View 1: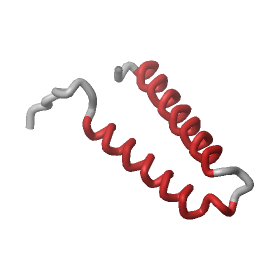
View 2 (view 1 turned 90 degrees about the horizontal axis):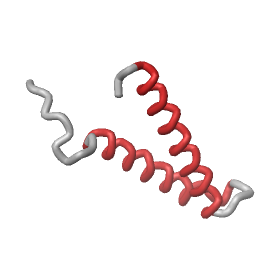
View 3 (view 1 turned 180 degrees about the vertical axis):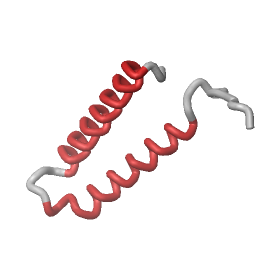
Length: 68
C-alpha cells in the first residue's frame, strides 16, 4: 500500500492517539482527583506538562535519530 503521507498537514494517527491519551487522563482526574492533595486544575496542569515533556523528548529523539 502506498504511503499517502500527511494529506492534512499532520499525522492523523498521532493526533488521534494524543487525543485518546488526553481524554483518558481527563477521565482519571475526574474519577480519582479527590484522592490527591491537588485541585483538579493543578492535576490537569501537571498532566499537560507531563504530556508536553514526553512529546518534546520523543520529538528530539526522532530528530537526533534522523527520522524527522
